[in-house]
Image (tube, rainbow, N blue to C red; front, side):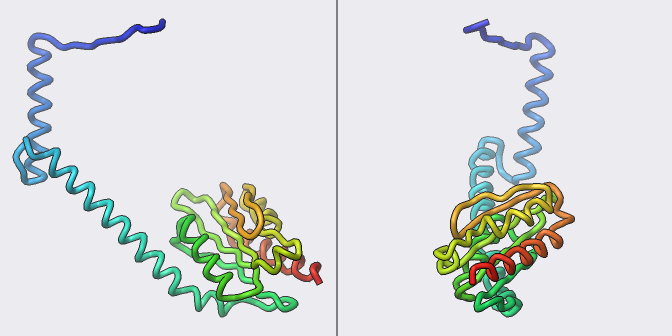
Length: 193
């Protein structure tokens, strides 16, 4: 029913037991944090702020490590009719890192198709594809390269133009999906000539 509120209350010995439990929890937390109970909120707030800073630093360091591996990945690109085609699995990369690395590789390789993928902690596949502006101008879109591979991992691809992303339920099939993307990229590049 509209505008009804439910109020719960404790009285008598149950109220005292509840307050006793709450006080014990507060004392345990203050002991763990090595502060007095009235400083707990401030200390937790400080720790959360420090945690956010540390998480950002870890993400930045991870990103730098991935970009440092770009040279080695770029060396693995194959030549197909004047276009560089690269597909690779990048363990430990999150969605944003994969995209950043793919864009960096596209810039390093020039006229290129780049498809990168990784398996998430929960066993799902994630892939990113980029195509260079020259290939895009000739009608090749990143989604066209990525869609067949996305089907292999039980998902779909989305995106327009030069960048597309895909995900799927079956991360165990990532290698097969990347191979399908490589085959598709080769065929599409050859068909442009």
